[in-house]
Length: 473
Image 1 (tube, one colour):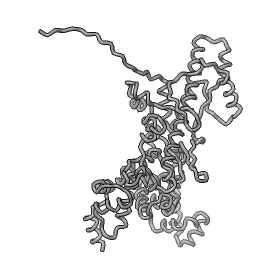
Image 2 (cartoon, rainbow, N blue to C red; image 1 turned 90 degrees about the horizontal axis):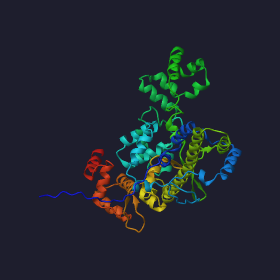
Image 3 (tube, helix red, strand yellow; image 1 turned 180 degrees about the vertical axis):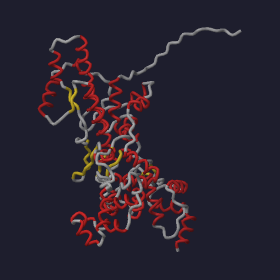
Image 4 (cartoon, rainbow, N blue to C red; image 1 turned 90 degrees about the vertical axis):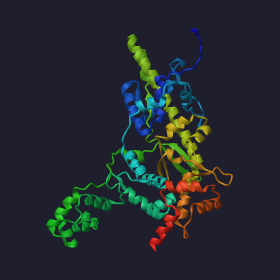
């Protein structure tokens, strides 16, 4: 007979409650400057004690003086991890959230952040789809960083080749694909090229319009009669052609588009001062708020109802917490960016071939913060460098062992070396021969790895390359 008994067990467990303030701090950490500005606008609308920071230094001084008079009871208590960065400012770390809470932070962030199908994302999506070769995709994203506010690419292919340290023919091949992207005309070199694309897309490019496009300077400086005489175009036909040109757009991208905001409003800036790379936050786009402490103190001295006092107190504490969270957000982003640039300084000096292998874990361990904190920062922030504007996550890639005692090579660099060997081969090189040549350069890579990388880059095997070479003769 089975005995049934009830047993009472006592189990001790830790569970952390995610406060609204804590969730707000996580959200701020993930937002880039553009989205942060939108978020703070709403916070200011909801909180009468908040105001967007301006250039009034006297107002800032007044606020700072009033802050000194606040009692410790006015301070909002939030559970943060206080790691000192190079300037000694506290930073925010989400490690304890992932280890202590049963709530899915990823789900919370996904629900609270508004997804945007931005023009920048549309172009990067086209890059990801169009370039199966990972190195080509990387180069394409680099070229995107050079785009002008109106969508033109004023930098020449030769300049891109030098800046990115990439073969000129490869730059031209990639750029040809980029110029086929939507919106029409993005990456065009000049007005003539963009107008030509527009007219071709509408099947309007006839001989008269081709002639006009070759002489745009004349159109800008001459009247109709002079143009008709110099270009030998019938006046009526000329008027019709000019009407068609007037209906064309002058630039591929509206200057108010989010693509321009993304490229021209990076969160972080890297500049070289003598022999040192200086990393700073982009103060021009970094939004700030101020807490109207003087206004709060004035209202506190008035006779108010219990509900009004509670309302003011709640908003004051919320505002105080927001200001603190913004300071910690800025400190953490700067600290992570500095460490990334410290490890990838050779990229800034030498281009893509200078990229080192780097993982999120490497940055997290170096700074003693959680890997998820690094992930949240790098997934949404952009950084301006003399080599273009990049997402922070651009600087992370897998490592491949070398025969020397260094830290290894980025897989992106190894793939680029394989491409160089194949492009410069006189006698067709097998995967085994490629592996041996790489080992001669100190790169410890097996034949199977060479084959894997070659296939990922859609490069044909040696027997196919040999056949193609024979057909080309």
